[in-house]
Length: 148
Image (cartoon, rainbow, N blue to C red):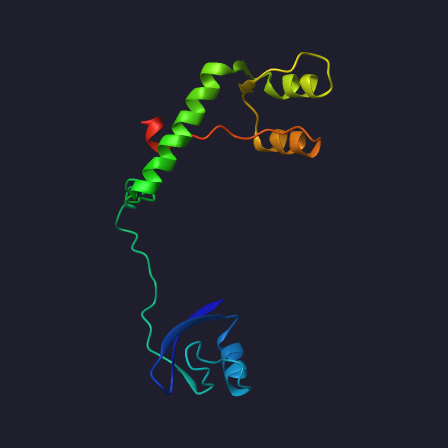
C-alpha cells in the first residue's frame, strides 16, 4: 500500500492510500480519485517526505495516559451528587453478596429465596443474561472522583 499526499485544482490538500502507483494512475484517469472537499476529479500527487524511522535512537517511552476532562455545570454537579447518594443508599440498605450476585438474583427471581435488595459483582455478559431472563439489574453508578 502507498499513501499519497494529493491536491485538487482548488488547492485542497488531502491524503489517500492506494494498492500501487499504477492503481493510483488508473483510478485517477477514470475519475475515481476526487477531492473530499469540492469533489473535483482534477487531482495530482504532491511532494511527500518518506516516513523513515531512525535506528540510532531508542524508542520514546510512552507518556502519561490522557483522560477525558470536563468542567461541570451546577446541574451536572447535582446529578453527580444524586448518583453518589444512590450508590451510598444501596450500599447501606442492601446486602452485599459479592461474587454470588448472579446466582442470588436468579434464586430470588425464581422464588427459591426471599426477595431482598442485594448488590454484588457481575460481568457484562452475566448482566445481559440476567436482563434477557427478565431479571431487572442495573450497574451501581461510580462517580469518577470516588475512585481517587
